[in-house]
Length: 275
Image (cartoon, rainbow, N blue to C red; front, top):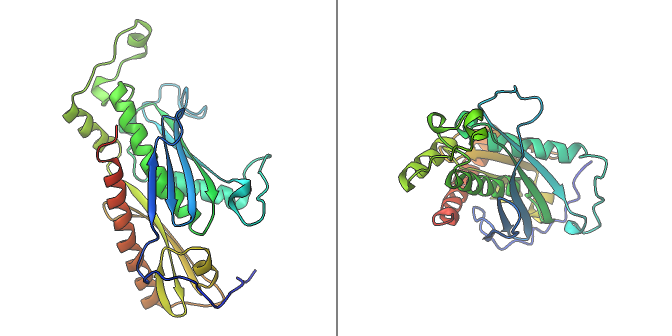
């Protein structure tokens, strides 16, 4: 289905300017880590939780962990009510969940995480474009904070310090790490942050961080996911009633790379003194 173009982008942002971003940590009290992430008028609640055990399909004595993600648009997040997917995630939702999960696993060393299963739930409270990208960026912050807290509590330890099942049954206390050791282990478990951004060609110009109006008027739109060491997790680019040249493709990726670099700086700043 073709996009309905309004002809008016209604944006006073510069072509390479991100929407305003606000992050509120520990937005809900029950999750291991939670945050409200606002990017323009797109709002995502990201909550990280630890499962009681590894997924059933893992080997019984597995020493590596797992990171999963789920995504949902809440009923009031769109201009007309979005129906709850009570019988399981539908196609678009499944696609986004898998994107978020792949992105997070691209930033985590599951061997260093150890036999821990984490889920990051991304619930969109308000959708104004770029919900999947905002979810990736928000989920990365929640995941790092969750890992930091698991390390501080002694639940996530370096391989050589992990307790055996027999030790746990015998009530052996987990060893503690000092501040330097905790920071080093966090860097080993999650070497990079991961962020995502939508970019597009609107009226022949590369635009960064598409809101709904910009996305609706884009001839080409692209979602780019990158780790903080400059690696790409995914690039999703589509021409809408249009094609694009190699030069335009390069310009879109360049724009996304610069913008995501700003997101990584924001992620690091938000968590600088969080514990």
